[in-house]
Structure formats: C-alpha cells, structure tokens
Length: 162
Picture (cartoon, rainbow, N blue to C red):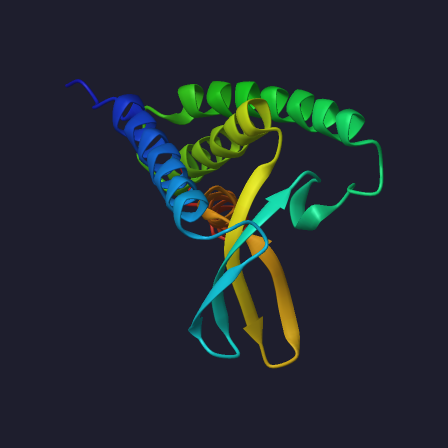
C-alpha cells in the first residue's frame, strides 16, 4: 500500500499564502495613500498603508537602510531555503508541522518579494485592544505567526507511542 505524498498540496498552500499576500498588498497600495488609514472598527481596527524598511515591528529602522535591507534579505533567503527543505522532508504527511511549514514558507516568500522588489515591506493591518497598540502587520506576517504557533502547539502535544 502506497502512502499519499502531500508535498504538492502543501506547496499549493504556500502559493495561496503568497497570492493572498500579494493581492492584499496590491489592493492597499492602489487604494490607500502611504501613511493614511481607513477605520473599519473605531478604536480597534484600521487598514493602513505603512512602508516598513526594518524587521518585524519596524525593528532596525534606526540603522543604515541599505545594511538592514541586505541583512534581512540574506536572513530571509536562508530562512526560505531551510523551511523549504524541512517542508520537503516532512511533507509526505499532512499534519500540523507540515501545514505550519507551508504557512511559514509562504509568509517568508511574501515578505522577501517585497524587500527585493519594493525595497520595503507593505504593512496594513492595525489592531488596538484597550491600551495596547499592535504594530502594523500583513497577511505574510499573520501566516508566519500562525505557522509558528502551530509548531509550538505541536511541540507541547502529547506524542503517541510507536
């Protein structure tokens, strides 16, 4: 009996993440002027148009923009290669780990595309809950975080005896 290989469906998930990221960022660029916002839920949620030249949460913006961009591109390429290899190895099975890696790979490629082509990452989701203001993020960031959370849950999940 031959087991099904899920690598192609998982790579399709990765491609869908990239597509959703590109389409959402293109919509934002076309409809919201950089630095502006549209309030969807007053006091809680806005669509913004932020050009992030730093790392996550705009970290590193105080350093040389070219240095930060090159370091982030190098790190992103390395991360994409490592996650792709990991996905290829575990992708024969469909489980939380393989799904997490597919989401992380799509998110990493989405933000890498921005850095290579646009020289910045487009962030556009702004959330505020009570007094906490979450830094603006995008679909790629969301998929990376969801993937990382799945990996953490998988680590703490009780393992079955073999």
